[in-house]
Image (cartoon, rainbow, N blue to C red; front, side, top):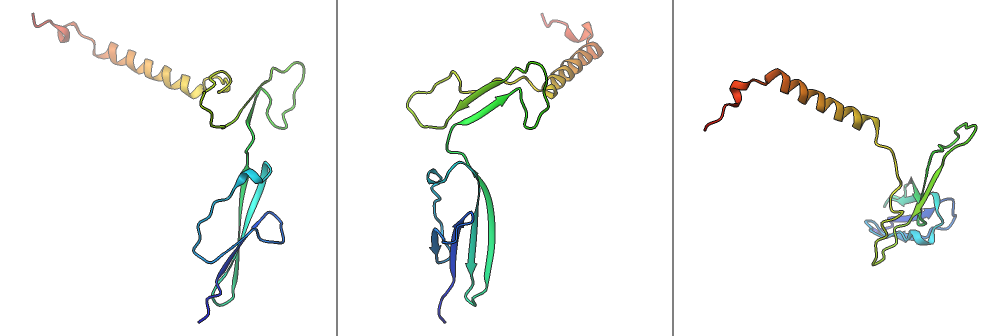
Length: 140
């Protein structure tokens, strides 16, 4: 029986596949040649009986620096003055690590404060409930 199984890989709405393989296959997708933004990989596979199956895999390419904006959310309605912090940092591999600008400053989440307060409250409760001078007598 002739083996006519084939896998064709398309990027976005391209009519020509950028790769054709015999299954199973393992390959590397070089995203440096794809512009930043949302894309999808369309995989068309043909079985040995000639039946085709299609699978779309959406993904997002971000080869440029990560851009973080604090103080303004998408589609937010604002008025008066708005304080905005913008930071951009990339993942280039250099020998030197730049500490300044590597992280975007953010406030500590409210759930962390609630957890700390609950822990301290339980510790105080435990100390007051079970503190007794007889339990702490010296062995000397």
